[in-house]
Amino acid sequence: MVKVTFVSSDGTRREVETAEGETAREAALFNDVPGIDGDCGGVCACATCHVHVDPGWIDTVGRLKEGEAEAELLQFAEGANEYSRLACQIPMEAAMEGLVLHVPAQQY
Image 1: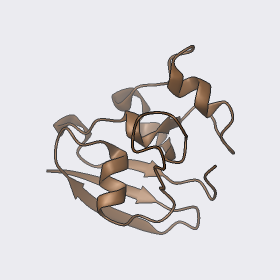
Image 2: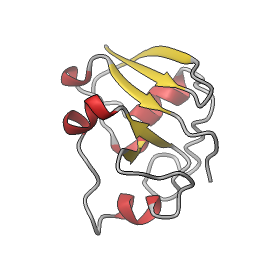
Image 3: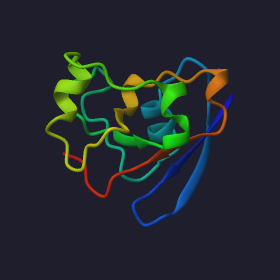
Image 4: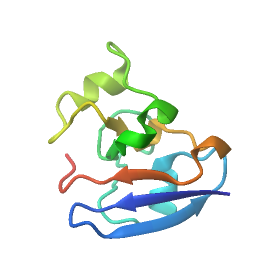
């Protein structure tokens, strides 16, 4: 199991556990984390699982790659920045133990 902390826009922290191989989106949905909708079912088609990776974790998680579907979707997400990722595109692995993800105030 991998521990992940989701931080809501009001600063509330919610630590959850998820199995390796699941995505951060699944970790949020399976643990009722508010603010992560994941409407497309995790197929990188909607951006309703937009998160900001804590700056200390961005190199471990990886940055967006220009031209990929994820980057294309996030260009339209409210509040997207250099730390933005889609939670459905973050597979959980042991190296991510303690990962911190910030949930935007709104999802579209």
